[in-house]
Structure formats: structure tokens, C-alpha cells
Length: 339
Image (tube, rainbow, N blue to C red; front, top):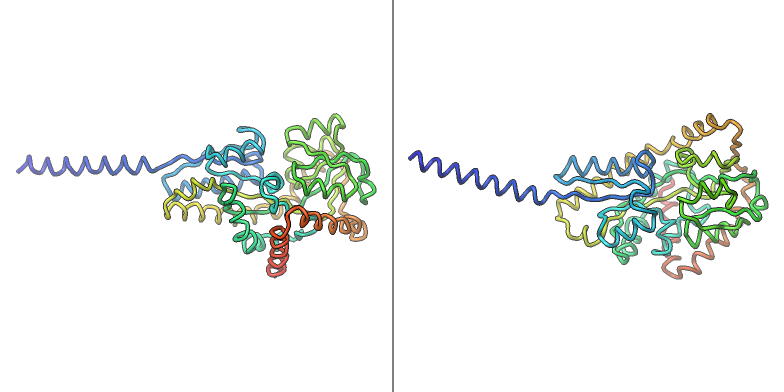
């Protein structure tokens, strides 16, 4: 009898070991790279995403901030190749890969109101449905897009009108439409990878660049420029994606874990970044009191807004019917999420 009991419990123990081993084998470590540091907006989002994944599954996430795996182009290639499971990259860099994503650089398309933006990114049909197929065609599963704050220009000379940008070598991301935007604004657009921007400003190879306010502080760009100007022309958008083959291979339960993590991290970051511009701008002016900060009046913005029509036409020329459909849907989505 005892031997039978021992055999029974021995069998149970063996089964438990087999089950445990099986569960352990299913617990994976996933890699996630992004374009900013761990303490910047993309890093904060990634941290919240990681926390949600690890709290609701046996999987773990390894985070790779900017520079650890190369420049933006490098991490996108790694995500498409399946070396990375997740990547966060602005449409500013994916614009060459997915031309329609350049729509986020049509000036004055997006509002500056952060509450409106939070509703828009969450509810937009263009973002949550139409873009899904465009990203899938490039081997990517679009999980979420979110705002990082109003874009500000930082320059060595004051900017009160388009005329003040004449002959200014202005750094832009390697994005065809952003190049067109700064041409229309009167500047000389100069595409540069981010790693060359601080040195380029320091040595006067370039005389201006644009980014959200928090990024101006965290990267110390204010040290090598003298003027911050808010023209209201754009809000920085970024997108979190998964490798498509990896995502499609997940179980339904794991897909839900990923989708829920993306959604909960979105809710957190949408609230987190609302007051970030003001707090980081204060840090800049405390560190460099002589820095001038200018918010252009409607009259001063007139030339930039006039240029926006040219850029919008250029976007449609670049992307054809597909781009026009995306643009029209985004405009409808923005109208629908006003209140």
C-alpha cells in the first residue's frame, strides 16, 4: 500500500515538474527599444508597458533606451528582422518607410490642446484602424500612437516670422515632408541623425532644430541655442509597434496581455505629459536665465500657417489617394474628438 502511495505521489511530483518546466518554457524575455532615455516620455511609457506585461504574465521585458542598439534606423531594422519584439519610433523616422505616416508633420493639423489630443489618439479611426494595414505591410503590428508634447523651435537668433528663418540651417529628422515644411517656412532644412545635433549646433553647422520642451531640457540642447519659439505648428507623435510575425505567433491570451499593457501605459502617459512642458521649461530658464521664450501671436503665425497649405498639398502629391484618404480621416477624427 505504502509503495502504491509513494508511486502515486511520485507520479504527481513528476507531473508537476513537467508542467512547471512547460510553463517555464513558455515564459519569454522580450526586447523593446525606443528613441529616448529611460526617464524621457518614451522611456516612461516603456517602463509602464513593461510593468503591466510582467504583472500579468510570466514574460519579461528588456528595455533598450536610445543609443544602446544604435540610431533610429538601426532599431527599426532590428524590429523588422525580429531581433526586437517591440520598438517605439516617431513617424518622423518611419515616414520614408511608410509615406502616409508623414501626415503627422503637416503643420497645424494637430491641436495644441492636450486633452483633445489624448482623446484623438485613443479614438481616431485613422490611427487605430487605417494605419494598422500600412504598418502590417512593413512587417509591423501598430499597437498605439501617443503625443509627447508641443514642438518648439530652438535657434541661435530670434524667430518672429518666416523671414527670420531665411538661410538658417535647420536640423530635421530624415523625413521628406519635414524637409518640405522647413523649406516652406523659409529655412534650409538639414537632415541629421540625433547623435550629431548637439555638436552641429555647437560648431554652427546648423543653427536650429525642433523638439518637445521636455527633450530640450533632458538633452541640454538649450546650452547650444539661445531662443525657444512656440509657433503652434505641431505636436510630437510617436508609435509603439511589435514585430508582426512575433505578434501573430502569440496566443490569444498573450495578445490580450500586450494590448492591455499598451492601453494602460497610454492612459498613464497621456496624463503624465500634460504638465511636462511647463515644468521642463522652468528648468531650462532656471539653468539659463538669458534664454528667451516666445509664443508667437496669431498675427506672427500667419506666414507659417500660409506655408502649411503648401506642405499639405506636397503630402498629397507624395502619397496619392492613400495619403489623401488618411489626411481626410484624421481631420474627421479630430473634429469628432473636439469635446
